[in-house]
Image (cartoon, rainbow, N blue to C red; front, side, top):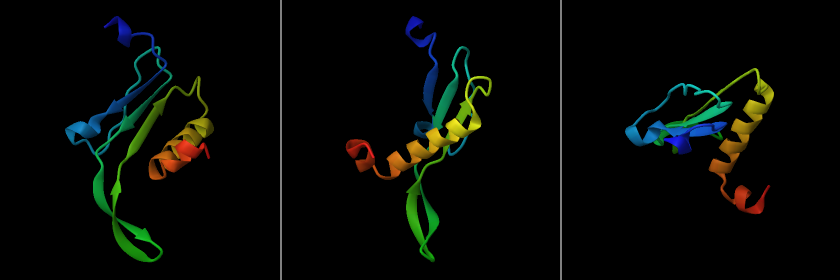
Amino acid sequence: FEDLTGGTFSITNGGIFGSLMSTPILNPPQSAILGMHKIQQRPVAVDGQVLIRPMMYLALSYDHRIIDGREAVQFLVTIKETLEDPARLLLRI
């Protein structure tokens, strides 16, 4: 239990239990928590066509006293882009 105390950021994966969406709750002294959810096939509009693609919702809860919304959204965009194109991580783009 001691290994789980004092963290500043954590990740929760409700997707393994079938969760499609949630709002992760911060545990002090954490400054943020990223919720990852079930990957599911969904219809998506791509170049005027409806295609079926795997999609996953991400949710980020954070302490606004520590983290500005702009930086939080930039972090989520980076996570999204990395998951959509893992080569970006390897090439550090």
